[in-house]
Length: 413
Image 1 (spheres, rainbow, N blue to C red):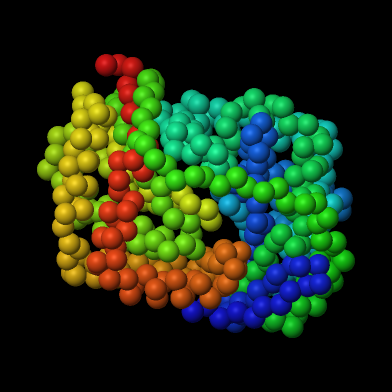
Image 2: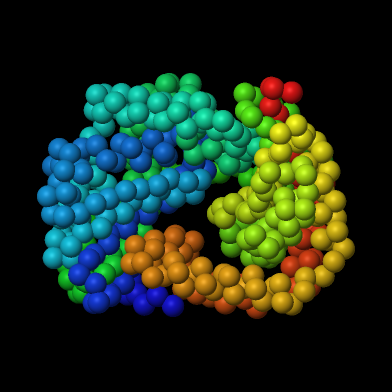
């Protein structure tokens, strides 16, 4: 359990304080409850684009990074389907600087035409370099679009295509900012060598007068259950074929999510896993293979992915994977394997909690899900799930009519 104190400002800003007086460092983590799931067709990629905009300038801060570096601080951020997370690390004695910087860009971000165009060019270049000009770079553009019919998860965080980014208007950018960058849509965690009473004073000083958003939130269209297998073939300039087979799984807080996570751990975690031993070490089709789930707020995907050996086809790879999955569904999870997987989960949790920044991020993430204590209670639930329940969910999820398959094939064939 991570110790914390919590309070909420009148404008809706949720604040958690994690005191760790063994540290002379402070972390200020600001999570906004906005990701690509809050976008609409034709205006995709805005959440990620805003991550770039937020490191530009605001009314009283000409250059964000420069102001922070003067007090020995550093910062970064990430965007995913569900959240945008900004974090600052700095000496605890300079804590107030972080509050000044975060409050100024929450309330008075520079959205001039020049700034909008500068960051548009940066994001378009990132799209080209990471997704269009990299081997296998656009895989999840295809996978997501195949697996989802209506939900915004059908495009990646970077955006569906470059045209959407090119066509952002100033009005689009301003509306997105006013809708999502407000205290009532944020969770702030302050951690490290700080005192809760001091943090309360600073939060009230720097954030207390920022108004809540008056913009109505758009509803998010939900995906209907899939009733038939989907298949797509893509030819690309890549060295070997690749296979991506995905299945729909429950949402982050729904029954079945933790079982889904355990299924991929049992089948695919580590060198001794079923996937690695059967399909890579003792097989001739797969050069590499893995399994994992998207831990998304709304129902997401379980992913089986692999790259083939030279000359092997993605179609044959799917047959080998299907055979393994069918055998798994007819078996029982042996207690030593389940114990090993749960021990690995405990080791990972312990490792992640060592760093102050990780603790701050975890508190923010679980608070955004509804309760910071989920960080501990979810783990405790996971370690108590019996093997029979895991297999029941495996049979529910690993059905062909619930699957979408991408054959990502080398043009060299």
